[in-house]
Length: 391
Image (cartoon, rainbow, N blue to C red; front, side, top):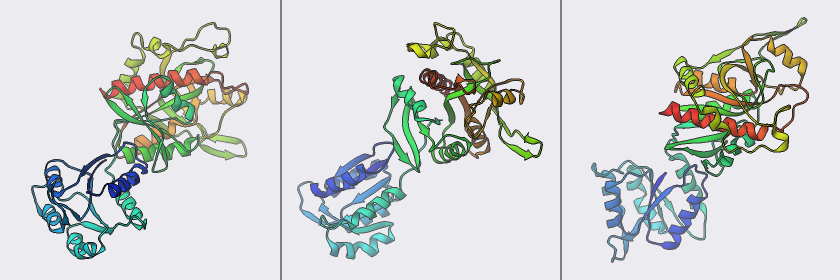
């Protein structure tokens, strides 16, 4: 967000700057200051800003004394060649008589007038609301949804450039840079389909990413997946949708699938020479992070059918039942279907996918032993896929 401040009083400028710094913004605002009208005029005529915060009594020239510049500001708003003639503006003056005099004229030109006092903080709310209402739309190249914070932390552990947590529209966001691409990693308020559907939809509508993906951990079926395998659902369905009757649960699997062109691109990425080695590069497993019966870690990566449900599965019997739903089923978890359905239903139509790593088979013997490495492997797969899909 680019903010222009015309203010000759250092204490007042610092007070406004401090207020801006306290705002929850994903990107640090870029603040330009002018201390006289002559400087302000030159800057505003050649560079576009998102908002203007203007004092009404400042020197016209660098060596001048403060004077009323209401007429000069009005002239700028009427100048068709000025790049900022329609930029949202607020006048913040500590001279109440000037505020009263300029109120009608400036209001007609779209400039809100607020009185400032170092002893009275009423102006703070006005500036705060003004900034909130006039923040420019945030657009990012991609968004990654992670159901758990440990899944998002993997990006930091891998050395990616990732920012501090910022709350935007009740979304827990961190800015992530992948090469020349800038995006967000967002953690929903809780695990599960409902929260992920809400979060995915809000991210698509708010940030309009070209790509939305999901990384993290999942469960796999013994017959088709092993620990640390990366599963990208080419088709994802909801395994707990249906109807309960006296005879038991009758499943009605709602489905969502990758776009065919995206599926082909991801298939090429997953099968490229060196891709699997890149996922495990520089990862040193601890004693408890080796899968049973092995003395080394390895993984495969594949497109497959997966399912999502709102409940954690920690039952061998339930896991066995779920194998019957689809003969090509490879994995199950709690969120991917929500992201797929949100993306398919959106008018923005982003590219979408999920790339999660297997940590268990959904039995009662679930543990966290494999979570760390799976999160790292999944994060690497996700960033590689995003980089190539965006190319």
